[in-house]
Length: 217
Figure 1 (cartoon, rainbow, N blue to C red):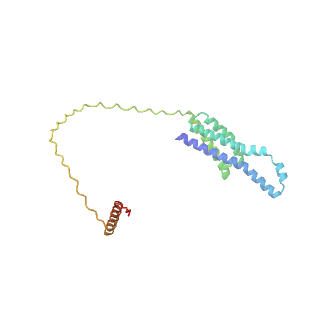
Figure 2: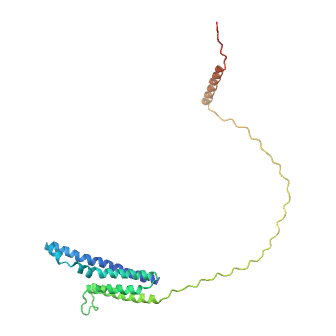
Figure 3: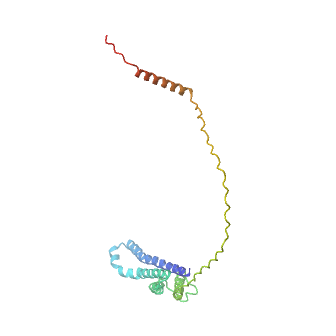
């Protein structure tokens, strides 16, 4: 649990430096665009910009610090070697953050919000360094597995013999006769129609069976 908490705090520093890297590159670009709009001299503005110095001075250290802190958090969470080295490299890469604020003489007596934020972040980073170094010394705790208790010996159980069943006379099998089917109710109209069909069928049958006589004279 402690290892995961420290890895999460280091990841917070990594996210902050990644956001700072994006802001450090974007902010000078925004200010440069504003100067172009105000002075209406785009060509002179392009010639005056040193893009290499802009990328190295503003974005590269913070991006490198973010990557180092991410690697340190991954190493610590995965219980791998190298977490302390990556963290120290991240501190070295993020050290230019101190120069973002000008500390006046006796600033610790009445610090400004910017001075307090930078100083607090630096002190927190140093405390995290001590915690990371202490994690390096800790050895994984091995929890002994509890041996299963021996099962109690099974006691023999006396089983009484089953009583003999007396033969009973076979019961006579009585078969029930099927009941006569009950007449179904047929409406009068359907009954008349059925009778008409039956009479018509009989007439057709009689007509087919009638002998045919042929008169020659």
